Image (cartoon, rainbow, N blue to C red):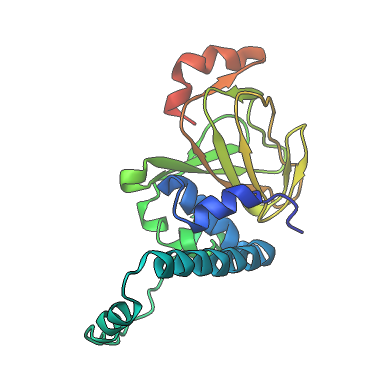
Length: 220
């Protein structure tokens, strides 16, 4: 069950097109997986459309002329789009089905590399939006305890994990910042795959991992 979602203010900004492209990407992926947020966005779209129409009518000096201009536009041609064949994300023979929004980025995903212990990472090139990562925690895998210099957006793609703050399931979305300190780890048989975007390097806060802080931007 999905228990963690973008809040209504975030969804309202998303529907209005007023969030950063990378944020819109991870929101879209969550909405692909979350029926509740999909319904909320549909309602917000209706509300914003009504508000926009009301504003247009209010400022229009000649409504009939405006309608005439709209109906006089040339009819658009139907475009037939062939369904694309997206490959699943794979790691050592294990295949992960991604939400629709993220499927196109499999071809822009780099090779998997083992970080520490049972932790794997594959970088994702988002083009002008920057960089993201798929992180896979095997059963018993964990990310060293850390806080954030910026923000960390995470979407659970497959499996479950905990971090000392809460327990997260497939489809859950979180946005954390410097006010949060956590240690993600997975203790389920299938491990956990997450998609994560950070705008600044992590800051490790415990143990030998603190020695990695000058280089954390190379890994996370």
